[in-house]
Amino acid sequence: MVRNVERWRIIGYVIPATTASLLAVALWMGNAPLALGVLAGAIGATFLYSEWVKGRGEVLSDERMLRIDEITSRRTLQVLVLILAFSVVSLAILSQNYPSLRSAYYLSLGLMVLIAILKISLKRHYSRVM
Image (cartoon, rainbow, N blue to C red; front, side):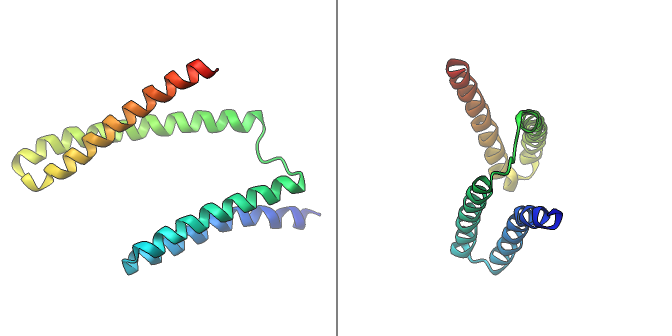
């Protein structure tokens, strides 16, 4: 029984590992359609795996796991925003001496604005829904 349970859990780890490997190969080859195909296949495989596990009656997440996911997502976003903020400031300073970095500065600034708009929008949405 233990081996059977472990076998279906291993598939959950094999899907992202295979996806990362195939994506690395596709990007190394410079083949964008293959990379997009790998991502589409990974989405499909993950969906099928999730449905298969639910069909078996396995519990993948409970209230505790949802809370842990919520906290880790929040902390991850906080860390990424801090890193992005430092990169925007650094690139703003460096782009004055190295004009070739100006596009990286605009990209970082755009990402930061996009994240801020997305966070505010989702916060407003969920405050109305919940």
